[in-house]
Length: 455
Image 1 (tube, rainbow, N blue to C red):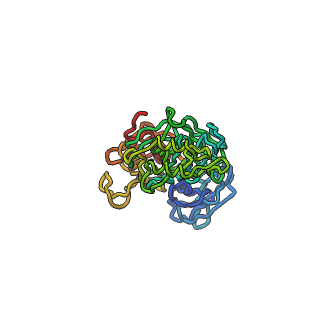
Image 2 (cartoon, one colour; image 1 turned 135 degrees about the vertical axis):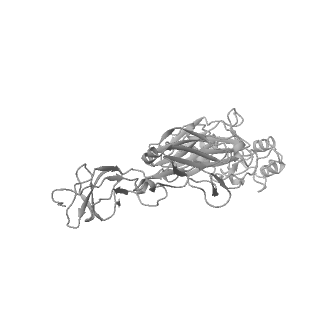
Image 3 (cartoon, rainbow, N blue to C red; image 1 turned 60 degrees about the vertical axis):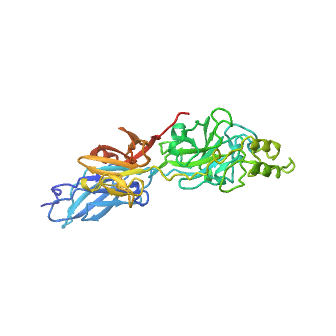
């Protein structure tokens, strides 16, 4: 065949694959893209050359990839669009016409890389924020530095709940990479006092959600949630508050973030194993009275109203909130769990489809149902022209399936893909294989909870 005048009998048809940097769990660096093309059928084929550049038809870079039909291009700059073609050449060095051109824009963010870097409870409208009820920078001075969020899998201690007389009236969440301004739709709030949050009631919604950009840990964005003071309507006290920061387009989290703070008005931490308010707390408060000349510090456990003065007012507060072993705040163990993100990677051939696993319970794979044992079954299954996308969660949990062509979004609801987990905790949805390949990335968004009780 005369390669000088006639290209290879079949020009290489280039197929752009998902960027390697966008493959969940690939562990590769950003700025990479993988391309694949049809093999040329000429018997004297020697290899292929990959051309690319920043303009359509303008290729400043060339890579001789050898006699292979896939190649990963590295060192691409975020935010720029690159154009690619492939040619085939024979043993004589003659080269075919270029393939069809494909383009790829390197995303500015290669994954939902926002993360929660701070979870705080603070004493809103106390002496430490100037008795100011609004959400503002003054609240940073009222953060309970000796308290920390109870996280999934942990058992509560005195470090996870406050004794503030106004209850839980201020929470701060620091998110690095927050994509927008959150609303109540980006959160879920539940209240209860046992080890099974599935039975907890829906909590009152915060009266305000405020974002201060750059005010959080290491320059993250600080979200401030405010509730009314106890015992006003809509207030929260003497129980646990579960806060779920949902994985949404606004938060840009890869999965929901769940944490807890509790409140036991009058409790001074006298017993590590109990959060009961009793006469022991009153005696401890009376033994620690101070004056304005020697103000109490923010972490003082006896200053129940956080006015910098331990006094008879704190004694009366504790006496008015005595509890028993039944009515006291329970030192719960927070259940483990979380949401996940699944991706569908299109390989050089249709049968080369693969998926990252969606986090689920440790399990054995036996048919269509998990059982206790080893590793979780795959989160994406390809069969009969359909893509089955599934995850394991709490039975009755409600989810909505979303898809995107890039893991950084934009994310869109998959039509008709609202699902409720069955009795085994399985939630799944089927989408056509072609559409799934076009989108490549999927995630489940929590849209409701089991056993939701009215306020």
